[in-house]
Amino acid sequence: MIYKTDDLSKFTFKPENRDIEPDNLNKIRASLRIRNLLELKPLLVNEKMQVIDGQHRLVAARELGLPVWYTIQKEENPEDIFLLQTQKTWSRVDYLKYYAHKGIEAAKLIYDDIKKYPNQAKRYSRLTHVLGMAGGATELISRLRSKKTPLPLSTKEMDTARALVAQTEGIIEGIQCAMVSRQAFLKGDGPFFAMVRILKKEGVTEELLVKKIQQRIDAIHQCSTREAYYDMFKSIYNYRNQNPIE
Image 1: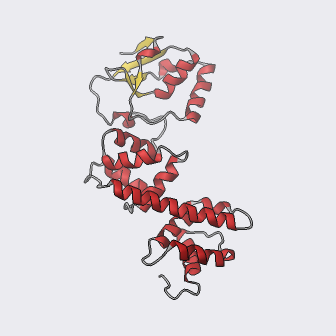
Image 2: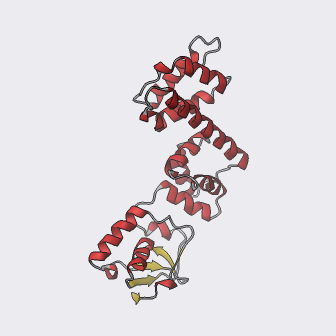
Image 3: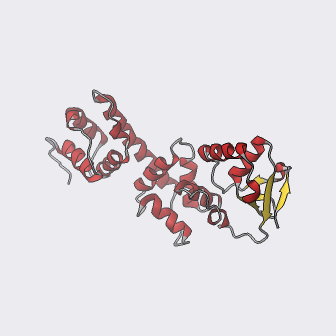
């Protein structure tokens, strides 16, 4: 059964649902200003009036003072929240937030970190890479969704990963500052992942790496692959080095 209401205060959001996306909200708001077609796309709520599907439509309707139509799903499967939201594909960060609110420790530790950053997807990708998770961010979500073996992740491991991410980003930022013109390519994941690989090598120290970079700053250039960036940084580190790395 489809219901209609002007009292939008009765609806609440599920904490594990994805965040409101400004671009999506703007698009829906603009469409509703022309014509209210919400009757053709009712909200889907549970018996507690928590929105399963349609939170962007609800926010837009509230802002414009429009009525909404809704249906109630009496028997709710926890994963309905992303299975039924077909208007826009859930991102890896959306899934991570969902599982974090469901109490999955690995998801919670990572989400508690990335939610502080403007570019959550980039932070998420870098953290999972540094943590050494097979397949990175995509593999983590695949394992969570398929309910495979729980992912062990400790606070100590997260602290170590954060430190390595900060160390790597700091070195790359230093390279940008040292170059005649700040090179945009250094902001990408290619140089980052290559530098992480260098720093993880046994015997490599930040002090010596930075010294070698300062000596050969002119050797840094844009590359086409992560492997090419690694070879570039390796060549710089091995320059006149009695303990070269492979």
